[in-house]
Length: 292
Ligand SMILES: C[S@@+](CC[C@H](N)C(=O)[O-])C[C@H]1O[C@@H](n2cnc3c(N)ncnc32)[C@H](O)[C@@H]1O
View 1 (cartoon, rainbow, N blue to C red):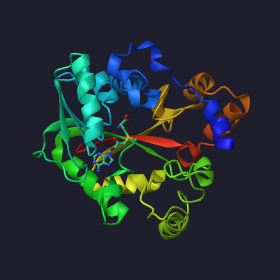
View 2 (tube, rainbow, N blue to C red):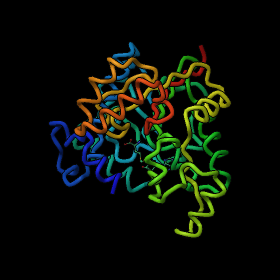
View 3 (cartoon, rainbow, N blue to C red):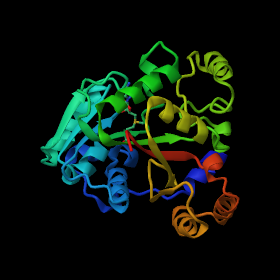
View 4 (spheres, helix red, strand yellow):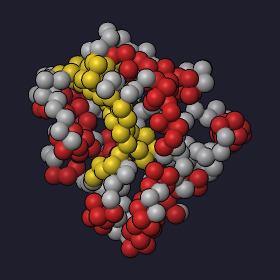
């Protein structure tokens, strides 16, 4: 109930005035996803990152919303997903929108079929936590392997854009953002596994991380420069993407636009003032560079 109440008070775009083609009618705003992609494109522009001549890889592209947004702003995109049905929808969307610079490939994010140093940018938006599902190995090991694969296919100055939920966000203690059970996000993994096995008959695989765990994972993989941002209110529907260490002034403008409840706004202001954003914010957006 608390989550529902909070969710109703969040900013949510309804296609943001972007026209839908036939095969997109009836899609949820989340799956439509073009507005999300446009926000990410703007984020790169604002940070002075030019992509015009770049090769971009989108891992777990779903039905291609982000790629549609990116297509005019980079040279070529390779969009891949493990799910063939989703790729078929993406294909129909690209065709209907006359987009010709996106190649669709079915692949597993933990085993990328590309040579070393091909891509300027790799996007993993809300996917790292799903990759372990098709594997028997420990979820964390598979996730590290996937990040190593990304590291391998990136150019020397290449960037990883990674969006994922924050394990420490108190709301996820009440409801795990992926499996909808209480406690599983925060408790030790073996206890989370006991809970999901007893309540759902499934292992616990949707590993998400705290700020420090995520930093450690990326450094362990080899990334040299890691900057952390947050999506306001979420990385799925970002109204703003701003640095986790940003000042109170930058933040307050964005949160007044993103949240409708005065109570939530005051709580967030408290988090900003006490500089505990990286502990309590629900999501992280990481920009990690392969080498300095
Ligand atoms: C929550 S959706 C994110 C979609 C997209 N990145 C976006 O932001 O609109 C997760 C996607 O990851 C895909 N996926 C899950 N496991 C994968 C894997 N091992 N390799 C590639 N894609 C995977 C799913 O099929 C799904 O389309």
